Length: 189
Image 1 (spheres, one colour):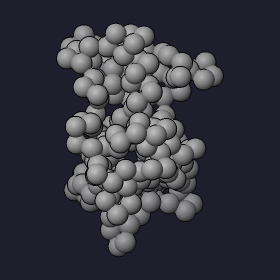
Image 2 (image 1 turned 135 degrees about the vertical axis):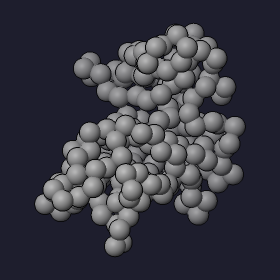
Image 3 (image 1 turned 120 degrees about the vertical axis):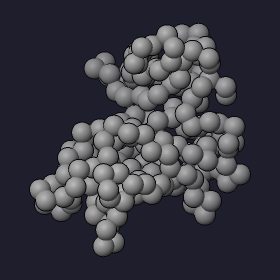
Image 4 (image 1 turned 60 degrees about the vertical axis):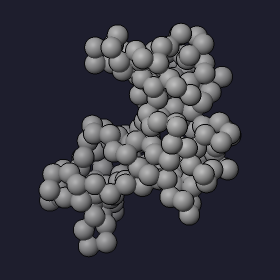
């Protein structure tokens, strides 16, 4: 698309996620990589602090192209982030003795937006917070490009979340004209 969105769309998958591709990314545009960031996830007592406010790149699984995952190190511990677009799930695990669940977020399949953590300390090792998949569906990108004349060398679409107005979304932009970030409210098509 060339609008500076993350991840790069020129690295498309040869294995499309047929369930979500047409609705979410557009035909034949499933990315090989997506990024996920967790905000305000809290460790349950006695557990290490989770990786908050850092984007992690998840790679598409060629055997299950609706699934993305990544192993990474943070705070001296190993972590695993898992995204499944068709099941609309985002999970975060502390990888030790088989894995300890810190984050479990679910929403309707193939939709953009934030994921709310449903994990609780009674059955998990972390609680609270949200997760964002740092990529936007093609219909959001096209609407924003037309309505707001976004320039690829100046702005990057970062993430989307619900606004206080039902049906509207807020998109965070980053780039040269936005010191830190700018927010745009719009109604998706």
